[in-house]
Amino acid sequence: MTTAIDHYAQLLAEHYTWMLGGDIAAVAEGQARLLSELGVRPGTAGTLAADLGCGPGPQSLALASLGFSPVLAVDTSEPLLAELTELAAHTGHSSAVRPLHGDIRTALGEHAQPSSLAAVVCMGDTLIHLPSTTDVTAMLADAARCLAPGGQLVLSHRDLTRPRTGTDRFLPVRATDDRIMTCVLEYEDDETVMVHDLIHTRTGATWELRVSAYPKLRISPAWLVECCGGLGLDVRHSAEGPRGLHVIVAVKR
Image (cartoon, rainbow, N blue to C red):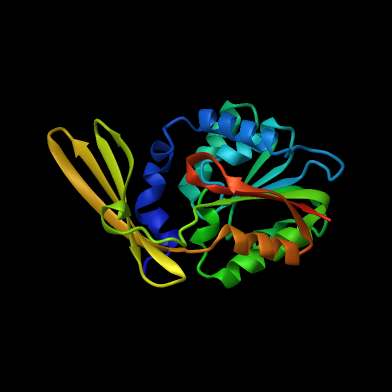
């Protein structure tokens, strides 16, 4: 079975920025507005933040623009981290954003001290890329331990607990003149769904299809809220946000 890390290395990383619209700086501006509306900003907890599964950096750049510094930007994809490094320099945030190549499951324990972080974000579908719910709870426990009192945890994920059936399993992602991406969901069991990414690219008059599949976790917002509560985090917000992703904001007691 292809892991999420392998899937990005073999297929998705080279198309990820295009998939998000091609302009990460513009996406970062939207994420900064979202985080600001959610009340995520530096305060008594300080300015040190972590972005787990940062990709090319829309959330890292958003945090930097809101005044967080440094922002520990963690991802397993070196090409996406290279994109972030270039974007941070281009947008004037190179001194605030610190790209880190590593596993989001262990990064906080390796790079952050207990009670040192003002904010931890894990957004997009990053959370459900993890291999198991045990990994999710362990990562959340690390986040809770490393957050300072009053520090904020921001999660977003796609709720896949209700299976799609028939043609509803086929999801158009983006299409341009020379590239088309479609996602197909195959529900394996109560815990995981296989995500098949189909990417057509055109060179001249010739189209090439590349396909890769990897598992995503099926976890509900209610389950995440319960986990946060058990870790000493007060959930202040839990609702559907942009692009059909459920957004949770919790504060360290």
